[in-house]
Structures are given as structure tokens and as C-alpha cells.
Length: 359
Image (tube, rainbow, N blue to C red; front, top):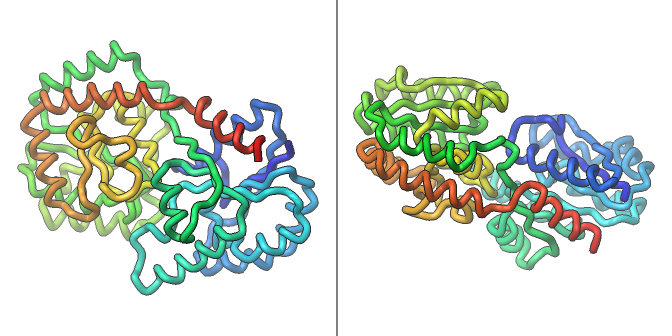
């Protein structure tokens, strides 16, 4: 097949969604499919809407003589009307790769109806979807009022070169016996949707000597939000408890996984690859009850789910784990077992590609 993929910016962008796209492209190319990348620039949401009248971009896609056009659903504002024009010149199926819906994020109430309408209109222009979770599939159906043909192909975490089970058991023994402050790890782009401010507020309710927060993620996307989190920590007197690492390469992130006691990212996620990556290293996970985290995190067995934006339950779980390292180890052991039961990237992407061939 000749396959096209529409994305914003570079396929090498650091995020779970782009990792998923890279793995899908890699799997397609490994099965001798030709994949062409069609990139649009990152701009504001309103500016992206003007891409719908980019005649040269539409002509490039039409000239490629594709058998299949994949579109990262993140690009929906640029494609909502352009797809209708492509239909007149493009005889192949159009498939959206859906990581999560923008209309499920926490935006201004005044803007949400607009985002919802644009996203709904875009999804009516595609022939099917590759979903990263059952939750994402359900949110698309709820938005449209009907199911959209597609396949659920879960992300995986074997790309992180996880430790062996024996090595994880050694880490669990060390964590269980530790008397040092609880090492809480946050991994994700430093943006409001990821809930870092809620996590800092929750940790600030605990004795400062009992915890340390290691923050891994790109701080350049929203500098104003970074300042907001720093100001919150200053008001609560815990600036010294926050260690900012910025974006890390794989080797440095691997060291962070090994040094941590648990992962806490209380955000809405369409799946949450970081949760599964943490489980590969035997780390319990604290995640939001909103989104798809419940498909990975089992309450009280591999971690805990907390209501979005609610620092009270989050502080309670963190305080309990700070005082019970044995519980940290037990949760981490079951988290590792959950990781081992999860499909690999090869298995998940093969499932998606098989569905594409049937289509």
C-alpha cells in the first residue's frame, strides 16, 4: 500500500501521541508499505482552521496516489473542511488515529461548544478510526451519537527497554526497606491538562521532609504554566521539594524510573503510555479517574485513581504511601505483572495493520 499520514510538525516530537504515530509508521514500513508524511505547522487553533483552504497541501496529497490516508486526529481543525474537498479527488479511505478528543480536555466553558462542534464535524468526514483505548472509542461514539468503524490498538511500553523481573524485584526490595523521603515522579509535558498543579498542592499538604517530587517534561510549551506551578510551590513553602529535569532522553529517563518510588500524573489521558512505562519498572501509579487510566490502573492493586482536580484524595494516597513503603512495594509488584500481560508494540500495531488491510 501507499499510505499517507497527516501530522503537525515533526514525527519525532516527544509525546505519547507522536510515539504511537512513530510506532505505527515503523510497523507499516516493516511490512513493506510505503508511508509518506504530510506535515502541517503548529499554530493557534484558529490559525489551523485556515489550513482547510491550503490548496497546495491538498494538491500534494491528491498527487501522491494513495491507497490509504491516515490522519492524526489532533489535526482535526486543519482537516474538518479540507477532507470534504479531498473526497472529490481522493478515492481511498481516510482513517483518523485518535489518541483523545480535544473536547474532552479542560478548556474554557465558552470555547468547549465550538471545539466540540468542529471535532464532531471532522469525525463525520472519516471512514474509520484507529483508537488507542476502549475509552477513546466510547468518547467518539458519544460525541457523534453513533459508533464509528474502527479498531482498538493499545499503546505499549516495551520501547523503554524495561528491566527483567528479577531486577524489578531487587528494586522493590530496596523501596520496601527505604527510610528516605518518598520519591514521587511526574512524567509529561508541563501543561495544565497534565495536572501538575494539583499534584503539587496535594504534596504540599504533607510534611515537607516526607517527599520529593521529580518533574520530567518539556517546560517550553507553556512557560506561563510553569511559572504558575512554581508560584504555587513558593506560596506553600515547598519550592525546594521540586526537582525540575526538563525533557530527558531515554537513558536519563530510565534512571528516573529506577530511582522513583511511584508515578503520579493526575491528568485526563486517552490512554497514558507513561503509566504503563512506570509499571514496567515496578512503580505504582496514581492517575485520574477521568479518561482511560482505569483500563491500566486497578484501584488498590496497581495504584490509585483520583477525581480530576481534587487534591484531597490525592494527598491521602500519597500520605499513606509515604508512611507505608511495604504497600509501595506490593502495588509495584502487581503493577509489573500488569505490564507483563499487556500487548507489545509489535502485537498492537500488527492488529491495527491487519484491520487496515481488511478495510
